[in-house]
Image 1: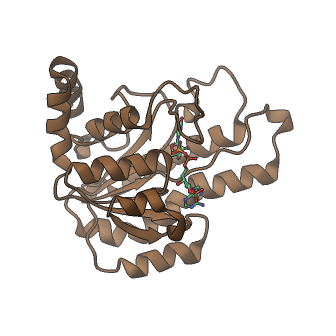
Image 2: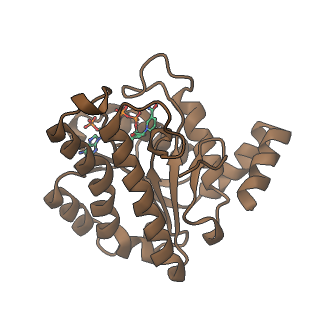
Image 3: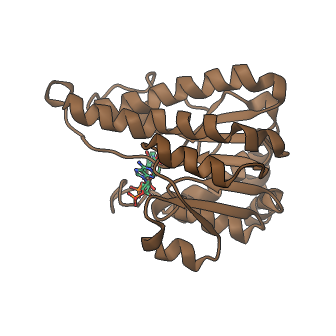
Length: 250
Ligand SMILES: NC(=O)c1ccc[n+]([C@@H]2O[C@H](COP(=O)([O-])OP(=O)(O)OC[C@H]3O[C@@H](n4cnc5c(N)ncnc54)[C@H](OP(=O)(O)O)[C@@H]3O)[C@@H](O)[C@H]2O)c1
């Protein structure tokens, strides 16, 4: 219930309480996938400002100008490419990681089920669902060496089966619903090692993916998510949480 208290504190005392929660990241080593733009870049920025050691990954590090400008460690990673994942794990061999934020994701189609392209669906599943599986499996030895043992899988409100009363976006929705199940399975299996595995929705955010009409800025969404994640303990593992700390229906 620590996150509920954190949320109440944040609502009561505003940014001071949020800042206090963010200091929980100080000294933590956090790897963020897809950190060259959008939410991943904002995670890298805010985590670094909170005193974390950030490893930000990009498919093309040579083009990740904004990420490099932060001065964080930048590593190449394409979550859809097993060789790229294996190479990252090799470069990080023996290095403790406190938290893994599986943020990288794609969104290819917004149409209805009947018009959905099965080949596009395969691509979406490969990046959004199998990608976090590959990366987490490869970096589990590093997370086992870390203190916090936090794995956040970036889900979406669109991954909620219970909330789906509008249809459309089928491959994206299914990729995130499967990621939710993956998260819950990891949580059950890794509970004995005190891992905290969380499926998180960032809300609708103004990034390349979310578009300019989205309701939240990346800064608002990410500070909300970091505030929610900071106080979580192993008792919270296996939950599906919104950026404001509310519980989402599976
Ligand atoms: N924005 C929203 O409203 C919203 C809502 C719900 C959930 N989400 C989720 O939040 C996460 C971040 O979304 P965003 O809005 O920041 O999206 P974005 O602006 O489109 O950024 C996506 C990031 O993922 C990376 N990526 C894509 N395919 C990859 C791959 N195969 N390997 C490694 N990295 C890859 C991209 O790298 P490149 O630059 O190389 O393409 C980019 O860094 C995603 O998982 C998304 O599904 C977003």
